[in-house]
Image (cartoon, rainbow, N blue to C red; front, top):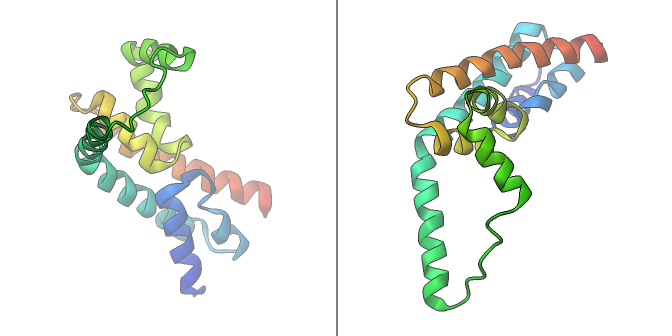
Length: 151
């Protein structure tokens, strides 16, 4: 049995930076299934927390913005940047739905990707399951990839 702190570090890395979460387990020569299970549990924990709390985070951000407007300290951001236009175009397409839902929580940090998915596509019933399954699949892919490269 490996040191418990390795499992904690993989779990915590899985909650925020899912791509690199298998690293401590690989360094400790843990078996594939233990690394995979710990990383995926961390990713799913963070995904569920931020998916179901996304509305509160968005509402809190709006309240802070309104408070700054009242205080006169709000500096408006540039609305129509090239990145914003691209994201809106991508969001509106069917391909964009699949790309953001599958790859958002995996390649961005899990909390940020999950809030983006929940903000854009919460009204789709299948969004939650698609993102959860993608975390399960990519957890296995990244763990196997790291084991192949570094062992």
